[in-house]
Length: 555
Image 1 (cartoon, one colour):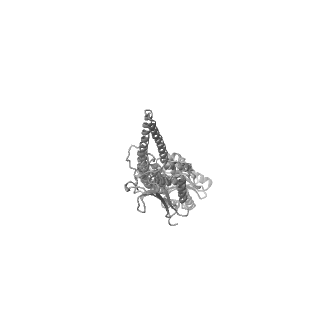
Image 2 (cartoon, rainbow, N blue to C red):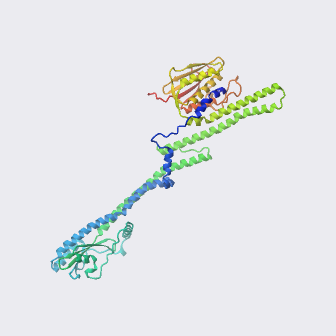
Image 3 (cartoon, rainbow, N blue to C red):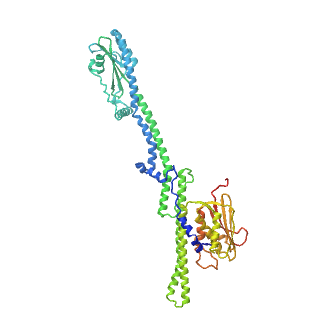
């Protein structure tokens, strides 16, 4: 038992089918939402970043902030300036206090003070008289409190630190600092800060750069009222050490964080990029069609978005492969089904020119006419079957009273005498039964089920149509008293071009597509269409259609 789309049923549903084809596509974007195309345009507007690989972008996003943080190494110059400002204040105070202590003291007392303060404060103190001549030097009176490192004998790490200091100064545009050069002259005028202090009578500060890159702070202050002056010299090695230590700590921390960020970024990129590359290669093989049994990885262990994408692509590839197979089979079936009536038509036409008997010519003419109608019917059914999936994918469902639809279809068929004497018994609920769907397509399903039942029913037989409301779905069953459907053939009757017709039926009156189209429409409505036995145990078949109502059982 098989299809059942009768020619006149096809004519009856032509108008409603055309209405379904003309149904508007729901392309409006909900208010406040952003369409996929808009999001893609926004991504395209990223410009150069969209041309970078995913790995490069992940690395850039994670490494760039650390590089910016590492740039803070160069801004330690501000920290160095703050330390120097504090030392300037300290040097000014020390010079003023020492100058006050030296004023009015005897020469022996002055020398003793120079030695004592120089040792305690790690400074060099020089005293000049009113004529600007050096009269006392703490480094000459006693052992030097400090010495400058010899650049030629510095260890390699000190050389690197010194080079880095100068590089940072160049990058940040630090003001140049004059080098500290010990003058050969013993006069005060070789020190600009001493000359200013003697002229202005105020303490003066001067910063110089030692050969090893450490700061040297000179403070000049007037001593008493006889024109004497004091020059203190301090090698602030601790400032350089503190700045270098801070830079080393920050640099080490940034380097460690940078290394960890790179490793984590590469790990993250691998967990994202590697499966995407696998999916891309599989998709390319599917597109090229060179590997018929290509397996798209499903990544079942991944529960994140990558796993969802992998399974979606795998399902899409399987659906595409099934669709390609279906198209191939459909094309082969179409060629086979059309070839038979064409061969019969060609044979009849070729015989007409050789046959003289009028009666035989009339028979050949009838055969040719029948084959033409059969080909026309096949083409109509094939076209409908081929576009049904695409149409249903863009059809907007509306509320349909399935009970009223069944009554109207049965009434129209009886008015047109399309039931061939078979009586239709209805068992429908007395109230409207609303379901979401496409009215024209649901009408097509019911027409096909009735055509199938009528074709297998004897004259004066009865076809029972029963509609049951089961809260979350409705069940529509069409039962006949024909020979029934063997259990092993109940899935085959829904295959395209399957036709197991009654012996009394004229050959070619059915295309074998009616039930296949009906099941396709039912599936598009999230429903099912099955071939079953009658519920009362009598001979016959029952085709059962189940469709969701759109309301949950809890309601």
